[in-house]
Amino acid sequence: MFAIEDLPIHAAERQHVIQAVADIEAVVQPQDAWSYQTLLQLLEQDSIHILIVYGQEQFASVNGNKVVGYCLYQVVFEQAEILRIGTQPAYQRQGIASQLFAKLNTELKTRQVETLLLEVRADNAPAIALYEQQGFVVIHQRKGYYQRLGQSAVDALMMQRVYR
Image 1 (tube, rainbow, N blue to C red):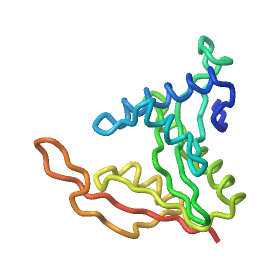
Image 2: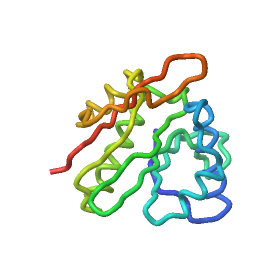
Image 3: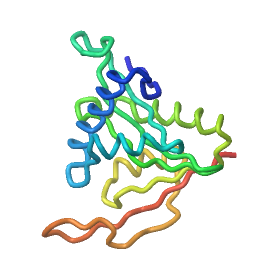
Image 4: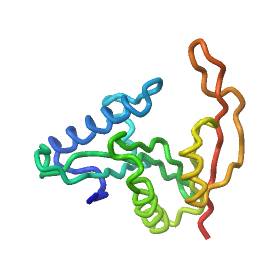
C-alpha cells in the first residue's frame, strides 16, 4: 500500500523526507545525484513542488511510513516540467510511477497546466516505455547530452504530454 502526499510542513519531518529523497537520488542517479542541500534550495522556490510516495513499513521512523519514491516538478504558468522522478529499486515495478503520474496529472489539471515536459536518457528503455504509456511523445533529441567517463555519450530525449 502506497500513499502519495505533498512535502510535510513540520520542519523535522520535512528534513527527514528531503534526506530520504536525496538518499534515493544517490541510488537511482549515481552519476548525477542531487544532494540534500540542492533539493532544499530548489524546494525554497515557489514554482518547485514535490510529491512523496510513502510505503507502509512496520518499523519505519516517521508515522509508520517510509519514503519509497518522489516526483520533483516545476510549474511556470501553463507549462510544467518533471525535474526528477525516482523510486527505490526494491519498490520498482509495483505501479508506483503510474500512481505518481495519476496524482501529478490531477495536480497539474487543477493548476491549469497545458503541457508537461521531461527529459530522459535515450538508453533508458523502461522509462521511455512508461512515459509513452502516460501519453508522452518525443519532441526533441539532444545528441550526446549525457557524458560518461570512458564511454560514449548518450542522447537525451525531450518528451512532452499535452493536456486537453
